[in-house]
Length: 89
Image (cartoon, rainbow, N blue to C red; front, side, top):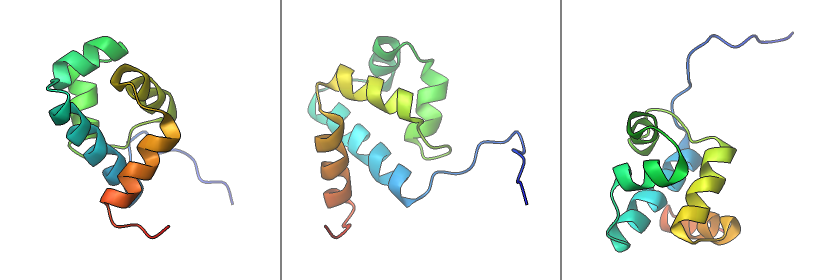
């Protein structure tokens, strides 16, 4: 059976919440605002804010852009997010 998209964005799951938490922590450490990050990534502040409030998950393209702007490697960023969220390695 094929499931068709409903047109709504799913809520962020545990992994997406761990990533958004690490993005928020990195923003705080770098004294950067969501508005600044959104502008640097070419995203709207509302779109990014919704994802950082865990109302929707980040997509892979947005996450890659965020990592570049924040000066973090994707793998290292994911590892830090998983560790901070208490995921076992």
